[in-house]
Amino acid sequence: MIDLYTAPTPNGWKASVTLEELSLPYETHAVNLAKNEQKEPWFLAINPNGRIPAIIDRDFGSLAVFESGAIMIHLAEKAGRLLPSNAARRARVLSWLMFQMGGVGPMMGQANVFFRYFPEKIQPAIDRYQNESRRLFEVLDRRLGESEWLADDFSIADIANWCWVRTYKWSGVSIDGLANLRRWLDAMKERPACRRGVEVPYRVESLVQDEKAAQEFAEKARGQLQR
Image 1 (cartoon, helix red, strand yellow):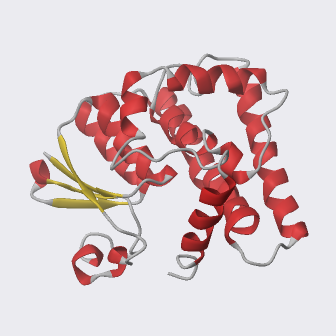
Image 2: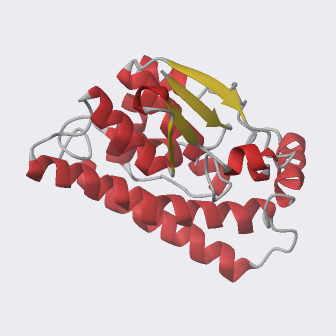
């Protein structure tokens, strides 16, 4: 049994979508970021870095695992799915997983900060992170022109990248002209486990069409920037 400590963010969804795709039993514990619960002693005992998601795997003697990529690898190995045992195929999956961890996530995260959350609009910073996010999308698009999935077969690499790329509108990044990426986004969205996973710990409605709601969300998020 898995205890999942999470919030409705791309990194949080990476864990919940993986759990859903693997059909592993888990119990969800919503962490209230607005109340800074991720910095409370009880949570720091699970993840010393004070970030979601984190899990406790009771099947491994209450093993605490943090960092979303590490959680995905642990779960895939536990279930024996979505991460091949063959060295070459495994390396391909891990390459695209780390592409998200080191590129897509950080760049889109910074795009969010400067485009949505930062009170002062610093256009060079906005351009920098939106342009780099778009460049990374183009890398994905080229790969997806060669293969249905990022690492040949569906894997945790697809889950990790999708949980971030699906939020491209919030980051202000266009996917115009990226037909392969759009095809993949649509294919991921059609997977029932993916749809279930992005409603954990609760469903969040899209904010990009509601300017007032978007502004209110951004104002709340500003308080998290230094936490």
